[in-house]
Amino acid sequence: MTKGENTIAILAWHWGKDSYSHNSYAHKGLLFQAQIGDKTIISDESWKVSKNEAFLTEKAFSPNWRLPEYETIYDARLAKEDWYKKDFDDSDWASASIVESN
Image (cartoon, rainbow, N blue to C red; front, side, top):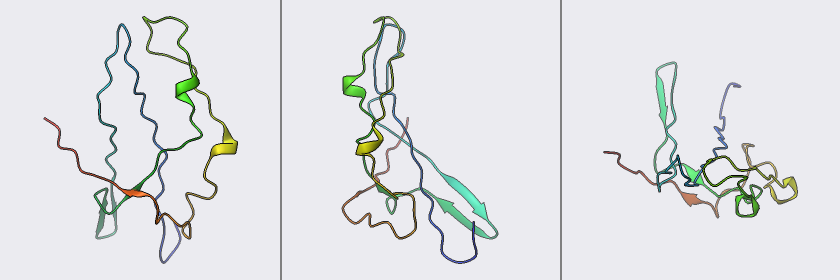
């Protein structure tokens, strides 16, 4: 972290596949909280989100339907460049939403 304005950028991956021994929750989720000096940073609706099209799970296959594992295919040619940098334009990204858990 440098003095002045910084960016927090997180790459998260939702498993999202049911199998014989695993049931995925329908909602993807992330909770981030940090304390920096007297400032608390927590993820909320002001955060931006976008699907990373470089993860090609729809082309992935499971070697055995009883296992939740499947191969992970990542095509870096489809990745958004510099998405983690401070000056990245995320204006076309959606705002995060709050999902209450039971």
